[in-house]
Image (tube, rainbow, N blue to C red):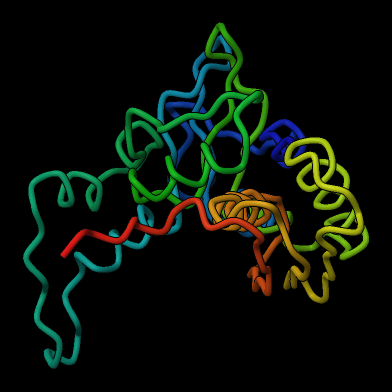
Length: 224
């Protein structure tokens, strides 16, 4: 069993900015390339920050409403600095949160979640930019065909990992939903099988209807 890697999912042709790229040029890059953020790189193509639509929109948030109906919001010092910025190095979020190409989907997703970011520049061992992986890229694993998911579950999970015969447990996959039926020797194997199936890329949910021949997790009766 292997999760898809960042290298398999990332966008390789990345639109980038330099430290001195002006505000309007960044806005043009976002619009013309239909992206929501661009990495800012140095002369060695190493990411030093990321400028997003949210960073640019702080420029308008800081402006007074001509009608006077909406008060100017209070901005922290770092937010005001971005609102007043005119070049990438003044607008960007830094340092960038980066991923490595060999990471799997789970690692990249957890990093995005903990760091509250929507995309990760992908760098090699010298910190040189290789690509960008976004939330949308990671969601592509759920576009896997049911046949591919079924093959991985029956071949990798049930047969090679759990050493189960085809007659013991069968799997059915529809729209990423896995249904397991059959019987195993030990009750303790059931949650293990379910957990392994859930970890397969593209699986949306797992329901199991599995029996067991030996209860190896039940508590022994106590003497009265």
